[in-house]
Amino acid sequence: MIKHWTWGFTVILIFLLVNNQCAQVLTRPVVESEVTSTLPQQQSNAHILKYDNNANNGAVGYNFAFETSDGVSRKETAILKNAGTPDEAISVQGSVSWVGPDGIQYTLNYLADENGFQPEGEHLPVPPD
Image (cartoon, rainbow, N blue to C red; front, side, top):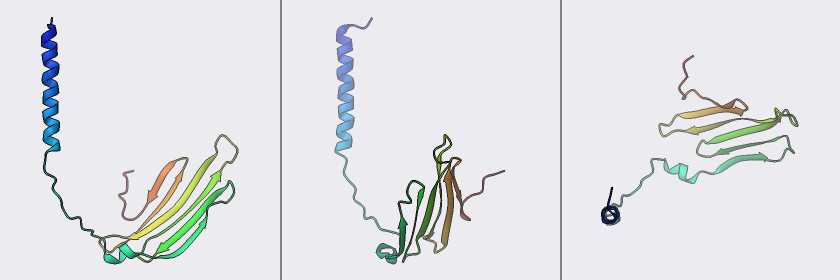
């Protein structure tokens, strides 16, 4: 059986060890480093070239689209399927395009519905059959 003074000594020892570790972390020097962006300069000043938004199609869905001067574009449409039934679900279909750091234009098409998120793009790996 552990004696009362042994229990107290153990608690104090654990407290001192934890306190010492915290003090070491708090007294470590902070190393500052400069963060540089790998994005081309023109991307930091992108302008909106096109913007369409129909956010309220009543209770049946929405759609929007935009394009920016740095090659980014996105469009998305959502519809309410099986309205008023136990199988009611929103189906969202869209695409997004951008220019990667390698200069290649990437496009991602997607569908999100009761079956989950289903992305498609030439740059994505293909799952085995």
